[in-house]
Amino acid sequence: MARFPNPFRALILYIGFALAKAGVIDRHRVVRTTDLAWPRIVTGIARMSKNAVDVAMVGVAVGTSAVAGVGFAGPYWGLAFALGGGVAGGTIALVSQRFGAEAYGELGDAIRASVLLSIAITIPVSAVFWTFPTRFIDVLSSNEAAIAFGADYLRIVGLGVPFAALNLVGSRVLVGCDDAYTAMQVRAGGALANIVLSAAFIFGLGWGVEGAAFGTVLSNVFAVAAFTVGLVRGRVPGIGEFPISISPFGSYVNPDMLRDLVEIGLPVGARNLVWTVAEFPMLAILDVFGENTVAAFVIARRIWGIMNAPGWGFGLASSSLVGQELGGEDSAEAEAYATDIIRFSVATYLVFAALTAVFATDIVTLFAESPESPEIPIAVNLVYAACVAVVFQGISGGAAGPLDAAGDTKIPFASQFLGMFCVSIPLAYVGAREATPAIDVPGLAVTVPEVALPAIGLWGVYLAFVAETTIPAAINYWRFRSGKWKAISEAYRPDAPADD
Image 1 (cartoon, helix red, strand yellow):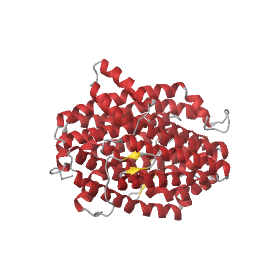
Image 2 (cartoon, one colour; image 1 turned 90 degrees about the vertical axis):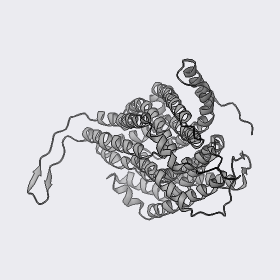
Image 3 (cartoon, helix red, strand yellow; image 1 turned 45 degrees about the vertical axis):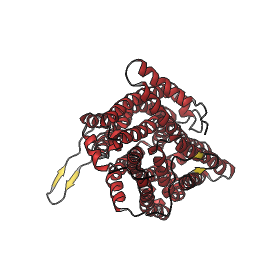
Image 4 (tube, one colour; image 1 turned 120 degrees about the vertical axis):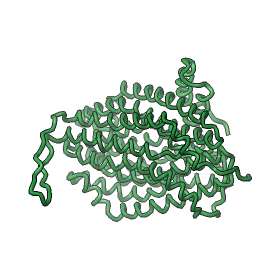
């Protein structure tokens, strides 16, 4: 299939060639990494733009309370990507190593086991969201209007949780087989469909936040259908050939594959859950500042998601390319790829962050009812903080890529947990409160007195943005430099190439 020139690929290649000319990275690895990364970056931008456009349309059509409500529902929807992403993390490790070792006979077992595991862990989540949406949103806020909007959104969008998880698995299968382009076509097409459907439902039918939720669910259904047809038939009309095809009638319960998926994917899922779970206390803390701050945070997070798109491409490119080299028993080349991709990733993040900072005010204004909306100045400052933080995300995500490929997924989880729960959230709490509450110790007749906190206000939220990336960046890079991941990968490599 012809591949048309793409400005994103050209921009990333230009950055990579500039680094290669300076002797920072190898030119051959620039080309191969770019070919695998740019479609995933475009996918990320499309998907995050879809999320941003959803919030912008809700803000324009319904108002600030609706934006806050969608924000309160966001972490629950994020569970789909935490759970599905955990399984998908195991999928790309198993698929890329088998693809690199040409053990094609084992690919079907790995993919079918991933599908089974994804469905088993996400359907109960979907059922709970449909049944108790108001109770979940009520935990985070006392704003009745925002709670009502958030519950309406969560009830509908929860139906899409299993499809979102399967969407991730399908994408990782193709990336692990060295084909991020086809995965981009499917997922970016789904994101564009989401924007069109949401606009029709929100503005055309007047469904408000429920319209945004229906658009999200249907777009994930369409993407999963395309992945299913492509992986079973080997091609999808209008998209083209898939790199592999598998039978849907083989074994889904392969104990070895399921065990490896859980061992590799559980820490990946837990790492994703850190991001998701951390949003619950963060949003509850922000609710203390008021509705405008919550809306500003939701807006800044959507913009952050677009800026973070390079990490999706470079992280998955690293996992795939490093995994293939490990599967081919070339640990030295695997490390060389990983090192170059980290440097490549950081440079690309710098470009994205600089462009976002220059146009921060103009971008934020698109999400508000009017240029005078009170959340705009808060959101602009949060975007500036995000521009600093996202550069360190390049280091964190780039270093996590080879660890994921090797199956060494516990350290990235621990680093994310420390950054979010031990530093980022406490900083936001300090900004929101004047003192810690007095605590009575049960059974000891002892009271821990309240402790006065520094009056840093919103600076606590700004610093929280930076803390959530700098600490994981330091820890993940240290682990990568230790080289232990190369030895760990030996436990997950295929025993021998299988017949075609």
